[in-house]
Image 1 (cartoon, rainbow, N blue to C red):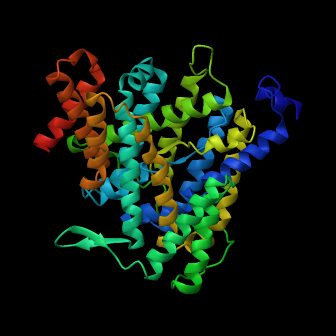
Image 2 (cartoon, rainbow, N blue to C red):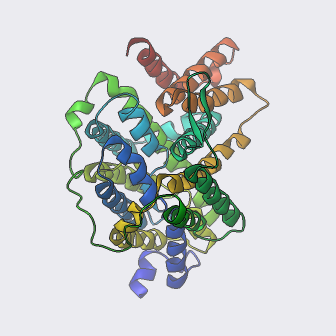
Image 3 (cartoon, rainbow, N blue to C red):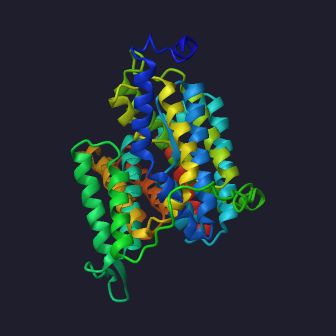
Length: 431
């Protein structure tokens, strides 16, 4: 025990093993929903649900444990919400690439992220992208996830005259989804740990009783990983048309990681006096490495989870929290039947709640500066309306650059924005 305490610097950070273990369990309960939601989303591309479930657990376990051991941050990792939606609805169903090619793109973005993590350019990239564009991207992904949630639950359906319209809210799927969503939001407001899992499971039970869903059991040996293991097509991802796809995967992963690390580390009091993050390179390397490994085992980009803040609020201060969470994800491997018993409208309840959390970033946009707020709103609105995270990001960057130039404030537009904007402009024009 003394060696563990010394390795994670427990005494120096004012914590102890018991507190760290409880914090790790708290973080796990806050983000365990991903073991169900991620396979639900990726299976729409034709990927095997059981295999993706195993890949999700392995990627989350690997990323969390490495973050704990190498970065010594109380930050857990798992396949990211938003990244999985872009993978399924953007790359595969939207652009028509195979899921194998999409995995290849995820792997390449992870490798590029690893290289950036080893170079000084990482700080330049993270700091160069305007804050308000980052907020717009986060909110836009939230809106996109929300749209996917209400579509999957049947709350919103296609309409030839108006594109979309309300479905029948009295049908089992939409009705149970809203019940689950309200329960999740209410329990979260009461600060009850595991609110998302509780609400999703409650909706699932209702589905078994009234909604035609099938209960397939709770425990079993893990499903085979073979259908998705090492199935990535890296060669197909080396295509000019995939440049913006890989760039989008990279940017979203970098933004998510940086934002989560700053937020959680600040809450935990782990930043330096000038507000910087110690061991930033190691933490970014842990995150980027997890993305590459996740692609190899068969899942979308792995990233740091803001739900880690729940563990910090419980007293967690070191990487032992992340290691504990990772071990618990390994234990999830034996719950595949339960995951397969969750109907789409129950997981949609969790997805809709996550969308609400992400969309609130719009509150922090600088609304007094039109050159900042307008591109953020355009970026956020374009994602759900174009059904593409990549196109939304691209339009946001182009709009930001154009407005700054025409308003005579070109000096406020970082070089990174020009670079990304021109890449997307070329994509919209020639691809």
